[in-house]
Length: 124
Image: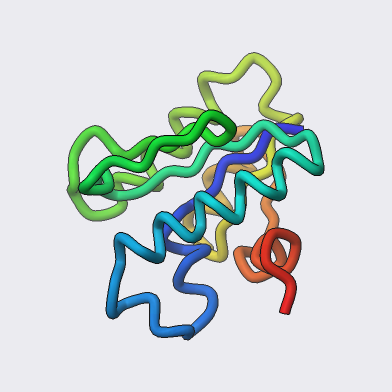
């Protein structure tokens, strides 16, 4: 199964103080996704609005960002990835953004709520 993760939406699904250090929250998300992907055998892409600075490297998770930091640009990038895939029905998009959910469902992907993915990758 291929996963595309709406990075900041998943990070924001838990009020754990992530806003005090956005970069650390991004790194923590990628690390959690790496551990989970290795065990689950999932192919994971995480999309952020802006490129993390400093960059986040991963040999397991594809870390990407929208080509421009415009509002909803990460959403547009996620939709582009789904539409560009020859098998969108095999993609799960992790987000709780209602508009994005409708767009990716319309493109053939499945949507998993952000908090559900958080439970999979970082159970409480």
